Image (tube, rainbow, N blue to C red; front, side, top):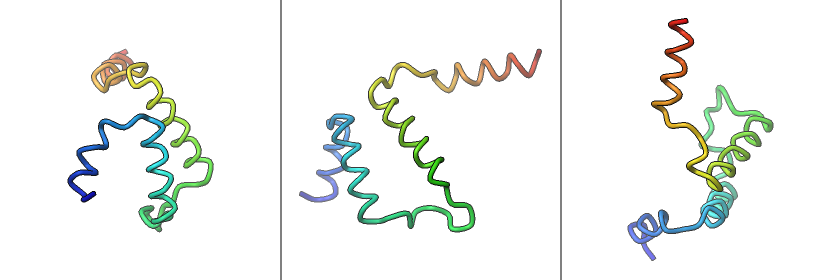
Length: 78
């Protein structure tokens, strides 16, 4: 299976499958993708993983960017 086939198959995978793939990629690549000048702490990484898992279980539960932006604008305008 080549890269093109893998990329085409990704959207059809379950949240659990995508999580397993991310875990495997993390094993292979480690934390090399992090900015060496400002790496994430273990707590930040855990929080990101927790939020990503929650999103993958219920992707429609959160707010859209438009909704978030509107709330921010409302607070700014008082």
